[in-house]
Length: 226
Image 1 (cartoon, one colour):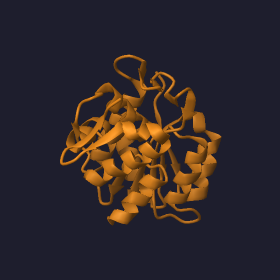
Image 2 (cartoon, rainbow, N blue to C red; image 1 turned 120 degrees about the horizontal axis):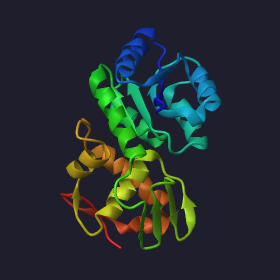
Image 3 (cartoon, rainbow, N blue to C red; image 1 turned 60 degrees about the horizontal axis):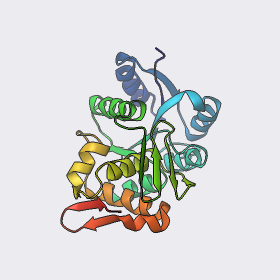
């Protein structure tokens, strides 16, 4: 079976080697870029082969936010994990706003990073349950990784797709933020409510009037109610 290819983008050679060594031990193939422009060149050259991108924020030529924004114009599905030395709330929110799926602050444990990569690839490559879920004019095709609302296609990021799928799978059930984090972001994600709230806000916006079907349950979390 062909190994999954991970693109690591970081201007620090030491950091790339550290992450690469851990990934190679887990039987991944690693592609590398040392700046934003090189990352985009490599991505567009080998887009169909890349299973996931690990993307640093602070880089020469183009920063991580710019790279992620350009990638999302052409590919809404490839998962992107952003790395940054910054830990400010606004930096994290900016990462999500340009389409990042996860956000890890340096310094971090390479083992945790690899665990998150494996969890994302398991979920994206091995969907459980029915391939198609439908409710209230919303149709999710897991095999095709596509969403239509009232027969109109809707472009969602990887995490938005996972979030909407989880809501429809649990229709009518109040889901706590902790449950959503555990299922959509995996058990080892050290995030908080801002992560979920930001993604729900973007998801509602993309769903148009159907976004109102995602209800806020005050003091708990969210519920999809058709």
